[in-house]
Amino acid sequence: MNYDFDRIITRKGHGDLKYDVVEERWGRDDLLPLWVADMDFETPDFILNALRKQLEHPVLGYSKVPDKLWPTVIQWVKDHHQWDIRREWLCYIPGIVKGIGFVLNCFTQPGDKVIIQPPVYHPFRLVPECNRREVVFNPLIRHEDGHYEMDFDQLEQACDSQCKVLILSNPHNPAGICWPKETLKRLAHFCHSRGILVISDEIHCDMALFGHQHIPFATVSEEARQCSITFQAPTKTFNIAGVVSSYAIVPDDKLRNKFYRWMEASEFEAPNIFAPTATIAAFSQGEEWRKQMLRYIEKNYEFVNDYCLKHMPSVQPLRPQASFLVWLDCRNLNLSHEQLLDLFIDKAHLALNDGEMFGPGGEGFMRLNIASPRSILEQAMRQLAEAIARL
Image (tube, rainbow, N blue to C red; front, side, top):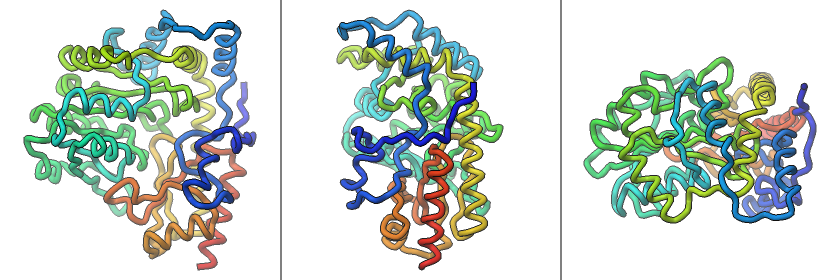
């Protein structure tokens, strides 16, 4: 079956976050939204059909977890990441950002320190801060060719006995990095030897691009296995963010027993009635859709890159190794932060995430969501190029 990713879906006016908060957030409603990380593609029919079948029954009461859920997840992870996980390692969580908060409240105390690696997904900073934990920055090193690597020398200097958790973005958001195995092993050794728990956010794990491969953090060494909690979900890959269906994977007995007992005490581990249905459909029927979607995303990136080279070479899109988020290097425009926002918002009429929200190293960058029909991207690139030409 050939899926149509060029079809334009009207989302505005349906309570949609990506479209319906534009005026509230940016002060005008004439912006093309290419910001929040969901897709403008229609959710696959096999997922919608499964949800419709669920709704054929006239009672939406308390529900048990379907027997097929965890075997389906286990098989998917084995097939795609060569990771043999056990049923007891798995637990539903009501969202990965919430899961980070749960881990911090279970394993740390107010005043403890949490390490993050900016520029990185901004809730990695906000969740610890709002839970009265101190955030320690371990900024990534950016090289002239645009690629990033971890700064272990700075990590050594910044880390002290109060550092209890490191939040890892794997694959990395917003830079789209599939971290190499040796990098993850080195990080695991560092954290394990200091008693630091690693939260590995792997929500983009099923979206590796251009021949790259995602490596789950917990698989790289016994040390990684012993010091990590992994979060995954089908939500980004299959465009079902509104059906919260995340899960945790915790191989270590001691960590798992403590965390899952904490979760169960408040029934955080109980999914809503629709989450298992969507997950089973996605992971049992979604492989062909996923492959076609990723090829379309790759072509969208090539379009954006070629357009920038031809019409606005001062904007350089970093080639992502995973996901549909593109990190735009706009520093050659030589604009201040306020001027850059003015360019994108008031001149180009585009709503993107600005780089500074991702922390140190994000200055002069913008994050572009390319999971849209090609015609939408063409419009966006044209608006941006015309705005730059008027500078």
